[in-house]
Length: 320
Image 1 (tube, helix red, strand yellow):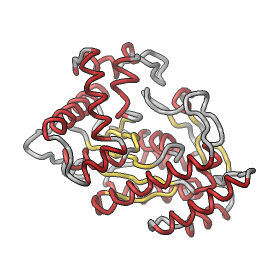
Image 2 (tube, rainbow, N blue to C red):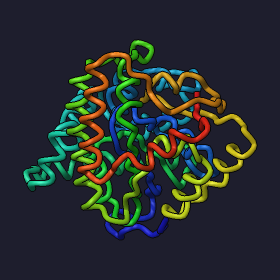
Image 3 (spheres, rainbow, N blue to C red):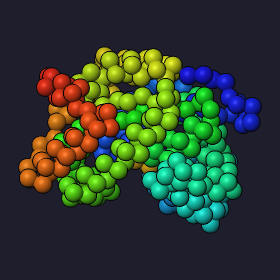
């Protein structure tokens, strides 16, 4: 990845690998894999840092509260925002970066003042994360397509976006379960509507981003993790040798300092286990939703041919 920065914001920013997609798509798994490299830092869902970290002081995966963590305590002190400022900026960021904000960006309906303030906040956070973590590359798994557009435009040449998709069966099966109480289960019809909408946003963002965006299927990552990491490394021009070595040696992955993500962040160290990426659907409504979503995927150009091939292979590696 090009290490040169635009002169308007100097050389204090890290390179960013941004993971875009839906919830339950495997973004936390991919982030942990990518963050286990020299000079890389997994920031979790950085979009939620103001609320989860600055305001609610949630526990980091290192075992300490956000305000006591070796990394995040430095970020909080250096950013220097009051609680009222955090709440105001979190609300404003939501209007620009979440799903409604995506369409405001597409149709040029953003207020210039709001955009400048949101961009300034993100650049400040990334600068201080880079310094506190001593990281040249920050992995952000916030998933929102609107945030992907905002960051790539604010940091030309510094951001690469991975669009991560998961098979309809896999994502519906995942949403049928609760994630430790943090992420509730969802009825199939809601999952269908949500995933269809988010993948539409991501497909539009991918077209606008061009070669700054690469599409990765979660099932392909499970079936051939080394091959997919090699592909991401070549595209991003980031050294991912640490990830490759752990995969080859079947070694553990360190979760690092993740505050905003799913329950996987609380495990500290993650090992590789053999498991199929295919989801088991028991209800008729789930199977119908999976069929409709499969048709939608093909319409958007993320068809299931590669997914089916990977699912029919021997079980792939997955982080648990």
